[in-house]
Length: 228
Image (cartoon, rainbow, N blue to C red):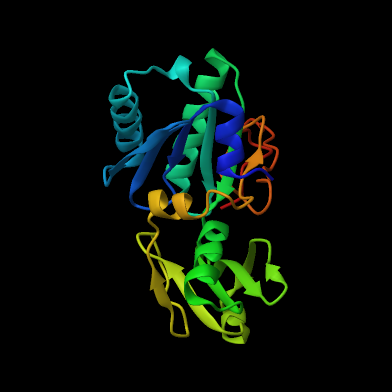
């Protein structure tokens, strides 16, 4: 898993997209130049492309000048993460180049370990239907993202955190501390951490692949009609 510093050294110029929260973040990272960021509270279908236009214009660049893409696959806003994935897939179809993803709660877990000097805690965000996305940090390190039932929250050791500006439909049954999801600051602080994973097919994060029931067409007739 490469770090942002390694990606920048390899590809020279990165376009970074994060729409996991209610704030859309777009960053232009270049070797030998300060990072340029644009943040918007507009919905992802507008804020994302406005942000891309703004950061590219600041450097007098176009999408063909980008060496690689990095993006947040989630968890977070499904609309936001899917909009990001769709955009990158389109750009890759026009001009193939590397793409890398990272996870929002893993990034925050690295920051909480650093800032709070505590190894034991969990960070959660609503996964709906009485379940929560959860990343737990222990003395042995940051554990992989998982989904847990609401009844499991009480058994988690240490403090419980949740990222700000993430949409929620339920309330945690135990006290939770808010933690700012400032993408530009987080990635600048953790540029050396191994957060990124290469992907050939950018997509929004899902714990399991969706399942679809096969539909069989049956014509209406007297034989299939339900008796009254």
